[in-house]
Image 1 (cartoon, protein in one colour):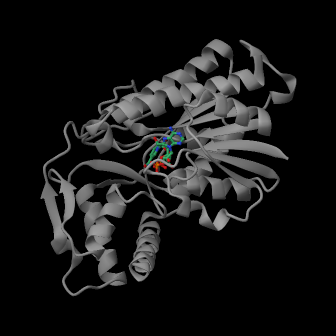
Image 2 (tube, rainbow, N blue to C red; image 1 turned 135 degrees about the vertical axis):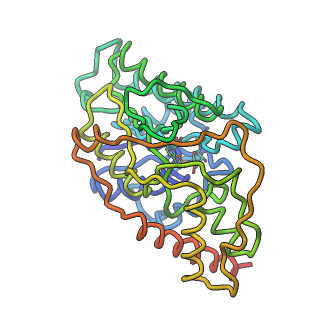
Length: 341
Ligand SMILES: NC(=O)c1ccc[n+]([C@@H]2O[C@H](COP(=O)([O-])OP(=O)(O)OC[C@H]3O[C@@H](n4cnc5c(N)ncnc54)[C@H](O)[C@@H]3O)[C@@H](O)[C@H]2O)c1
């Protein structure tokens, strides 16, 4: 049985990706390496407890011995690297762990893949010729846009917050292993994701959680910061396709041409909550503007043409339906938690 390594598989995107890979590759085993930081949630994997093809390993991607042990023991034949410190606000409060995990962790993994799959620069062991390392990155590496324009794969990197700088550095580490050693590696830079199992600290779960508890819904600054929102399942299909069919050494931008500002997101969520969980007054009354995040990037927008043209990828989720289903998922979670309390 062939084995893939997924890192960060107890987090938001990783836990959705593990499910996706188990379906897409019915004869593969998935080793899921996750440190279970505050952002990793074992409950995200609860329904996989009896799946023999899913092996969860609690551990740090910076732990070289552990990473090498996993490569050797399970003879890893493909990597989907997602483990990261991922919240911009936290990177402003304390950047150090971002540098450790996102830079050193990525280096540790990519170097282990190189050692396991190759005997030296541009010398792949024949049995490992098709093994690929995929690094999952963000559109935030490109900096911020004005009112017009889109990020393409050739947009110069200009990361602003420490989170984006650490991801940009990780992208460059992976790039160097392709150019210097010939490692079969790909990189993707994706826009903001939404969907089930996202950590409570992120925008959409925060708006829903605060609204459901009748507390003020905090929106940074004037709420006019724009992001390009993609359903997490569409991100997972893109990652799978890039890993299977992408060109070694290439970067692919992932997005769905769905620009929304934070005011629009908050308003849509409140309307959906009015429908799904009415509590008397409209939830939008709870929206409350708070001091902006320092250096808050104004607009991100992705041009996904390369992925669409080269690999035929297309997002399948319509935003209105995807957001409605997402709200229903968090409302159900909230009800379960309230019952248990
Ligand atoms: N969420 C988004 O909108 C988005 C968009 C583009 C790219 N990304 C990228 O996708 C990846 C996953 O993002 P997410 O939103 O699922 O993040 P997340 O914060 O929900 O999950 C990250 C996971 O990584 C684990 N982790 C953290 N440090 C670790 C370490 N040192 N060793 C092992 N595991 C560790 C955590 O326990 C957690 O389970 C990240 O690399 C992120 O940069 C996210």
